[in-house]
Image (cartoon, rainbow, N blue to C red; front, top):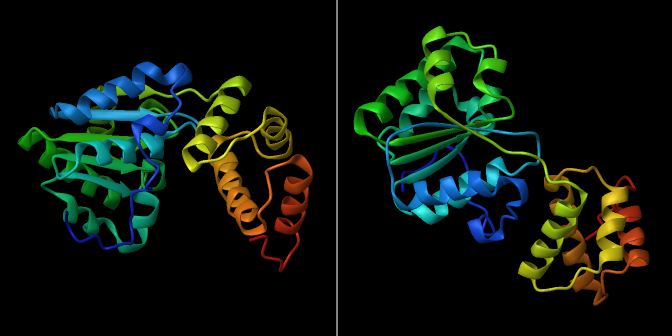
Amino acid sequence: MRQLPLNVRLHDRARFASFLPGPNAQVMQQLVELSRHQRGGLWWLCGPEGSGKTHLLQALCTAAGEGAQYVPLSELAAYGPAALAEWHGARWLCLDEAGAVIGNGDWERALFAVYRDCDERGASLLVAARAAPPQLSFALPDLASRCAAGLRLTLRALDEDGQLAALRLRAQQRGFDLPDETARYLQRRLPRDMRSLFVVLDELDAAALAAQRRLTVPFIKDVLALRETPGVNAS
């Protein structure tokens, strides 16, 4: 694996098995197949915040192994577009958060160079953003047309029942039970996107371990109250 110019680490729980597909089963299966049988082309993964784009890109890199690279463009932006040349040669290149650089001519020229490199080598280029290419304001028409012609994979947000199932799956993988009452309280109390829910669930698990407590609603109320108090560390 190449030396990254930024501190990118694949999350240890970013696996296909830890992703609750819900309405996105077909999209996940396509990515599973791509991780097993690398083939060329551009794949555009879009969906709302918290729908699982980052999880699936990292899961693909984990499953594909050597030759797969995950790059969050929002973090790479500070290094300038020339930093993208670091990943020329990857067999699977997953560029996350493309919306952070789309619209910037210099960045788009660097992205176009990456696209041509992947195209010439028959590598797989996966790009993720909240919106599909036609809804983004590209600076370079050539890049816009290439992205629009790619295979588009659209994720949908989980409904309330799907969120509950995803929370239970996350808890199971962390080795604890999550009662329905507790999960529903988190849904009512927190933003309704899976990223926010997972972050808080992980924090609550750590707090429960430290306090040797179960994740009951009263305990969660206490932890969240500390979390929202300025200058107080809930952990």
